[in-house]
Length: 158
Image 1 (tube, rainbow, N blue to C red):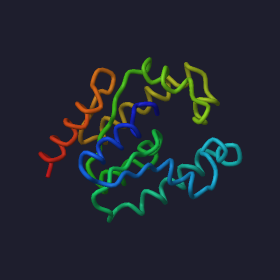
Image 2: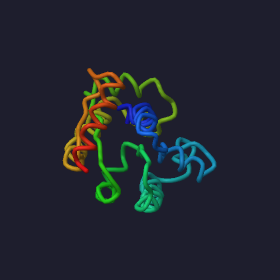
Image 3: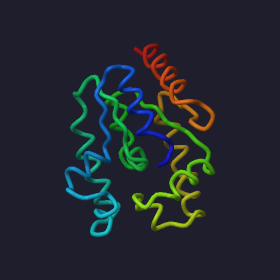
């Protein structure tokens, strides 16, 4: 959450001439409402179940950059590895909190304190690290530098 997945994902897709797919946007289209509104009537577990169904549909697609919600790798991480090259966009908690605290579109931010969000960050980080084929720090790198690093590492992995 707040690491730059959508911004960087769009830039990467453009550089590769791939399609960009954002799972949160796809789910909003499917729900016909924002994720924030969805959370008003449904639980996080129900949301994660919907994410799992959605990600299972991506196993055979090619030439796509997929940006997932920040919680997807926690409950659905292993399917990501079977789909493609997994990049963890890492940023320190302070940077992320500054980015997300201004947003009213993030249900987990709205329903949690800074301290509980920090615990969530600490819980998620080791899981992201294990699942990732590549870890990029987005705090001190430009979008173009991140894109170049991802492309170079992706090509080397092929």
